[in-house]
Length: 142
Image 1 (tube, helix red, strand yellow):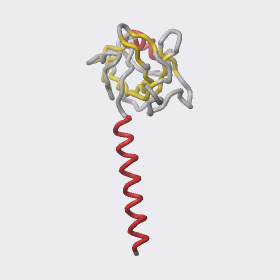
Image 2 (cartoon, rainbow, N blue to C red):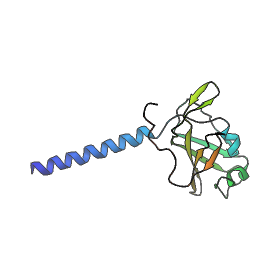
Image 3 (cartoon, helix red, strand yellow):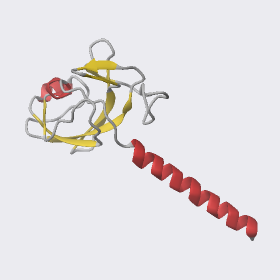
Image 4 (cartoon, rainbow, N blue to C red):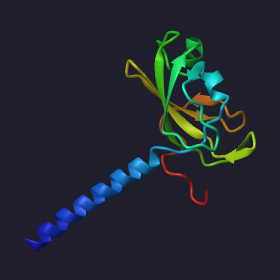
Protein backbone atom coordinates (compact mmCIF):
# COMPACT_ATOMS: atom_id res chain seq x y z
CA UNK A 1 0.00 0.00 0.00
CA UNK A 2 2.80 2.40 0.91
CA UNK A 3 4.63 1.50 -2.30
CA UNK A 4 1.51 2.17 -4.43
CA UNK A 5 1.05 5.57 -2.78
CA UNK A 6 4.70 6.47 -3.47
CA UNK A 7 4.33 5.46 -7.13
CA UNK A 8 1.12 7.48 -7.43
CA UNK A 9 2.78 10.59 -5.99
CA UNK A 10 5.79 10.12 -8.27
CA UNK A 11 3.57 9.92 -11.35
CA UNK A 12 1.70 13.08 -10.32
CA UNK A 13 4.98 14.91 -9.69
CA UNK A 14 6.39 13.90 -13.08
CA UNK A 15 3.18 14.97 -14.84
CA UNK A 16 3.24 18.37 -13.13
CA UNK A 17 6.90 18.87 -14.03
CA UNK A 18 6.19 18.11 -17.70
CA UNK A 19 3.16 20.41 -17.79
CA UNK A 20 5.02 23.27 -16.14
CA UNK A 21 7.95 22.79 -18.53
CA UNK A 22 5.65 22.90 -21.56
CA UNK A 23 3.88 26.01 -20.25
CA UNK A 24 7.16 27.82 -19.62
CA UNK A 25 8.67 26.80 -22.95
CA UNK A 26 5.66 27.90 -24.99
CA UNK A 27 6.89 31.49 -25.24
CA UNK A 28 10.13 33.25 -25.97
CA UNK A 29 11.81 35.94 -27.99
CA UNK A 30 13.59 35.99 -31.32
CA UNK A 31 11.06 37.45 -33.80
CA UNK A 32 12.76 39.21 -36.73
CA UNK A 33 10.58 42.16 -37.86
CA UNK A 34 11.33 41.55 -41.56
CA UNK A 35 9.55 38.19 -41.39
CA UNK A 36 6.08 39.72 -41.64
CA UNK A 37 6.98 41.16 -45.06
CA UNK A 38 8.71 37.93 -46.12
CA UNK A 39 5.61 35.90 -45.19
CA UNK A 40 3.18 38.33 -46.82
CA UNK A 41 1.33 38.84 -43.53
CA UNK A 42 -0.08 41.77 -41.61
CA UNK A 43 0.35 41.10 -37.88
CA UNK A 44 -2.13 42.38 -35.30
CA UNK A 45 0.85 43.11 -33.03
CA UNK A 46 4.51 42.85 -33.98
CA UNK A 47 6.87 41.87 -31.15
CA UNK A 48 10.34 43.37 -30.96
CA UNK A 49 13.32 41.04 -31.45
CA UNK A 50 13.94 40.75 -27.69
CA UNK A 51 10.23 40.78 -26.72
CA UNK A 52 8.72 37.50 -25.57
CA UNK A 53 5.67 36.14 -27.41
CA UNK A 54 3.81 32.87 -27.60
CA UNK A 55 1.22 33.42 -30.32
CA UNK A 56 0.62 36.06 -32.99
CA UNK A 57 -2.49 36.57 -35.10
CA UNK A 58 -2.06 37.71 -38.70
CA UNK A 59 -3.98 38.36 -41.90
CA UNK A 60 -2.72 37.14 -45.28
CA UNK A 61 -1.80 39.98 -47.64
CA UNK A 62 0.22 38.01 -50.23
CA UNK A 63 -0.70 34.30 -50.33
CA UNK A 64 1.98 33.53 -52.93
CA UNK A 65 4.74 34.23 -50.39
CA UNK A 66 3.27 31.63 -48.03
CA UNK A 67 2.76 29.15 -50.91
CA UNK A 68 6.52 29.28 -51.56
CA UNK A 69 7.15 28.23 -47.95
CA UNK A 70 4.68 25.33 -47.98
CA UNK A 71 1.68 27.10 -46.42
CA UNK A 72 -0.64 26.54 -49.36
CA UNK A 73 -4.26 27.18 -50.22
CA UNK A 74 -4.67 30.56 -48.57
CA UNK A 75 -6.34 33.65 -50.00
CA UNK A 76 -5.81 37.31 -49.27
CA UNK A 77 -7.66 38.20 -46.07
CA UNK A 78 -7.44 34.71 -44.52
CA UNK A 79 -6.28 34.46 -40.91
CA UNK A 80 -3.27 32.53 -39.65
CA UNK A 81 -1.74 31.95 -36.25
CA UNK A 82 2.01 32.11 -35.68
CA UNK A 83 3.38 30.33 -32.61
CA UNK A 84 6.80 30.51 -31.02
CA UNK A 85 8.54 27.15 -31.55
CA UNK A 86 11.91 27.49 -29.81
CA UNK A 87 15.17 29.25 -30.57
CA UNK A 88 18.13 28.37 -32.76
CA UNK A 89 21.50 27.76 -31.15
CA UNK A 90 23.24 30.76 -32.72
CA UNK A 91 22.97 34.53 -32.27
CA UNK A 92 22.30 37.31 -34.79
CA UNK A 93 22.27 41.08 -34.66
CA UNK A 94 18.78 42.47 -35.34
CA UNK A 95 18.68 46.24 -35.03
CA UNK A 96 20.23 47.12 -31.68
CA UNK A 97 19.67 43.68 -30.16
CA UNK A 98 21.70 40.49 -30.33
CA UNK A 99 19.17 37.66 -30.28
CA UNK A 100 18.72 33.97 -30.89
CA UNK A 101 16.16 33.94 -33.72
CA UNK A 102 13.18 31.70 -33.13
CA UNK A 103 11.49 29.00 -35.14
CA UNK A 104 7.85 29.72 -35.91
CA UNK A 105 4.90 27.41 -36.42
CA UNK A 106 2.24 28.77 -38.79
CA UNK A 107 -1.27 27.31 -38.51
CA UNK A 108 -4.15 28.02 -40.84
CA UNK A 109 -7.90 27.94 -40.21
CA UNK A 110 -8.06 24.70 -42.24
CA UNK A 111 -5.69 22.92 -39.85
CA UNK A 112 -2.48 23.06 -41.89
CA UNK A 113 0.61 23.62 -39.75
CA UNK A 114 4.09 24.37 -41.10
CA UNK A 115 7.23 25.02 -39.05
CA UNK A 116 9.74 27.51 -40.43
CA UNK A 117 13.30 28.12 -39.27
CA UNK A 118 15.61 31.05 -39.94
CA UNK A 119 18.59 30.71 -42.24
CA UNK A 120 21.78 31.79 -40.49
CA UNK A 121 23.29 33.89 -43.28
CA UNK A 122 20.18 35.83 -44.35
CA UNK A 123 17.79 35.46 -41.37
CA UNK A 124 15.03 34.58 -43.84
CA UNK A 125 12.59 31.83 -42.92
CA UNK A 126 12.79 28.47 -44.68
CA UNK A 127 10.53 25.43 -44.53
CA UNK A 128 12.34 22.93 -42.35
CA UNK A 129 11.49 19.27 -42.63
CA UNK A 130 11.63 17.35 -39.34
CA UNK A 131 13.69 17.14 -37.23
CA UNK A 132 13.68 20.89 -36.78
CA UNK A 133 16.92 22.58 -35.90
CA UNK A 134 16.24 24.02 -32.50
CA UNK A 135 13.80 23.03 -29.86
CA UNK A 136 11.51 24.39 -27.22
CA UNK A 137 14.48 24.41 -24.85
CA UNK A 138 16.90 27.31 -24.98
CA UNK A 139 20.56 26.44 -25.41
CA UNK A 140 22.78 26.40 -22.32
CA UNK A 141 24.56 29.62 -21.37
CA UNK A 142 22.24 31.78 -23.29
